[in-house]
Amino acid sequence: MIPLSHGLILGSSIFAIGLFGVLTRSNLLMILMSLELMLSGVILNFVFVSYRLGFWEGQMVSLFLMVIAASEVTIGLALCIAVYRRKATLDISVWNSLKEES
Image (cartoon, rainbow, N blue to C red; front, side, top):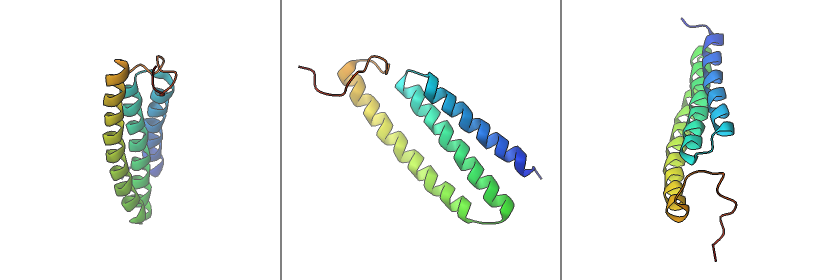
């Protein structure tokens, strides 16, 4: 059996890698992938703690988080396509506003 601390360290390190990616990347797709890593770390922690404590609520919350992650990917990719069609780049340092160009 894996100790509880090892599972929490794994989930927290996945979350930290995702947080580092969000804070350092300038490409929108890489930021979305890093957000998915952060959500995966949180889901892993929920599942691991709920399994070790014998509660099913954490596993149910993880299912809801997976649904939220799937919808976030769908909306995020749709926004990426819309922004790429307008600006022809996914680099967020180029964007200064989302208002109409005149």
